[in-house]
Image (cartoon, rainbow, N blue to C red; front, side, top):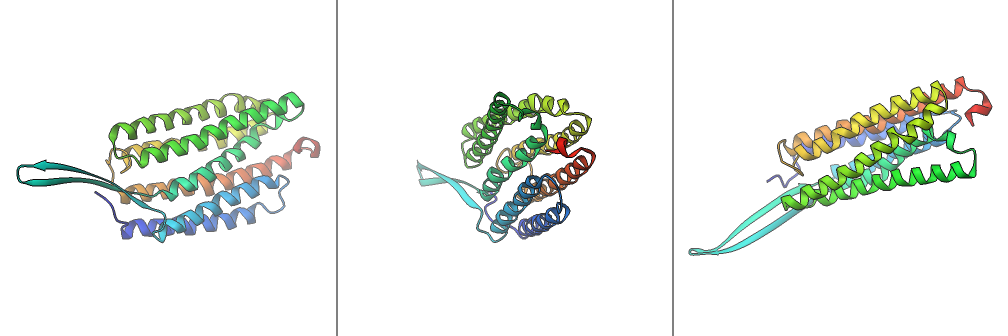
Length: 260
């Protein structure tokens, strides 16, 4: 049972804190003067929120010990079987705010073509609402699974969470990508690049959840925290910088009318 933060975990959490803070500053610097300021703002807050939550975890305030005790009367007295694990709940608070912002960054690249009429605006709104709703439920059900000690409950929630994840993939690879392709080669190339990176990185999260202490326990909590930190930095800082540089480059190749 791993129920205490180790020095290795603390070190990686401080690395995450510093990396997210520096990433937020870098995004503000790189995004200066860009036409589409909403990319700069959302990408900044993705890193800023993550920095705050990593700081919470690094200071030992973002975790909780989940435990369950079973008592049994035996011929020699009362026996107790205690199951417990350490869960970094702040990780899920981070994701429930930052993953919708990441998706909004992607969606605003791909869905410009759906803003030219009232009907298309409603279609765009419905698509965005469906993706963001599925994302929030994906994170919440993942948290429910992480807090579950019963194996059946844990994997039921894991499957439900993966179902919402697949729904997101269907939408961003289907209608949203079709919208991006309809806008021309430049938008299609940027969207496809961002989509591919996001998809690969996000596939690592459920695999790591399953292998980590919240799932099968095949890897230690030390390893889990280290890998989550690396993937988080890549998915937030790296994705944000690519979004901003790609959008700036795309705006520079478009006419003022096309960029709006």
